[in-house]
Length: 557
Length: 74
Image 1 (cartoon, rainbow over the protein chains, first blue to last red):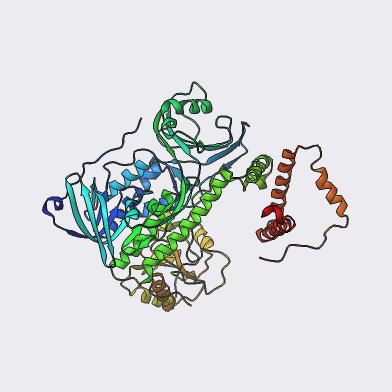
Image 2: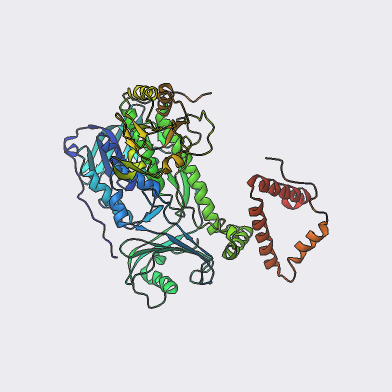
């Protein structure tokens, strides 16, 4: 194999010998992409975080390779999107093939949405994501990573958690206020708590071959339904950096899992696709059966689940890791405010509500993709073939072709944290939805709106030619009188004397937010809209909306 | 469920439309006919462009069939 993951020395803390019980605010279990970014998020907010991982190395293969726009925005907030973009492959062209027809049923151009900071999707091996994340973590002295530390018991109480941790040299005990389980699909913590993990196992298997071709090939995503080199099944091809290609063969239910992953049994499949004389090396081979499952509660006392420990989806649509990063994004600011004693009772529960809702939507989408790709009845097979045949000639059939709906952020329209609209809106971004991006000018430099949101509650106010009115200024000043981190952004072509000011240089921000002079939006620290007002927002409106988004005000009956 | 699916007759000359549907299957194998029917549904569904109407038609077609063929479904 080409790739050997870097490994780390197992940590044996002094507590093993001394028997001392240390107390930490937050334990993160699992140093995969989700656990690492969770630690980084809380670490950057100044909390002491201890990350425990039972293994001693990064991801042993490319694994999660597709990173969508929203997770990239989150990584950017955390400080490691730049190396992801630099190393990653942005892909634009996707082609869908059916049976032996050499020209595609149709092709699509997934050109990044214009005038936003991040592209729709990049491909990059999971271990790079982990490496870039760890590089940021190493800059923090309030986050400690312990490899070779396995949590073997969790006592979950109303006021905290006691964890037993096993190392090579013996066990020790930790006390924590919170424990975040980012310990993956087989989550030992979930099992220790005997949490339900209901859902469906699909009676099918997929063989992953990550191969490095000796010669360059065009950067395109190809998806085949029922090709001659895998009759009756599907095949997916994705480009990764370093000339590595992900090939995903659907192989059915009745297989010998040990035999099928042997290189001598994979090679004929690759030769059937690319010709007998194709030259390549293997980077990673794996076989998997997929599940669509969801944990009973993502919040359970002082234990919180995030990432694969909380939800599993089929890989079609890249909704696994991408969803996990959005769990982190949702949890970070909430836990921060809870630890600081600034949140209401409803805030932690809203993590469970919002992210369990997102998990259900992701499972719905990935189940639909799976049903299209692997029809379960004669009639669904018939409709799939009808749509694929029709799609070649008729544009309107193409939308029905479902080779995976790529991960998009899930809005929370019914969240208790939202302040419902008072005005009639025909556009813009609804409460409970993540922000759009647009180009702006700040201090004379071109940049992006999204860079100015996040970490704190942010009021965005659109000024008229004369700037913001003295009355509005008073309301904004009153809003800022709070222990909860809050800021004001004025959208204006002239610098405001008091507040951070952005010029909407192309007019796209106002257009995308459906804003006119006087319009205000309140964004949560995760860049989601808490509330919005077309005109005449008052300090009372803003403070009430912030309180509601802090879980302080109960949902109206 | 909405109640917007048109249930009154639309055509002055229904025979022509009926014939058209029958002719669509002329000379086709059963398998081809099935595909043609499916394609017809997809094209018409797109043309209607209203998921609520399609849901109503789907429900009506299904209920009508189940009520006539109840024995076979028990």
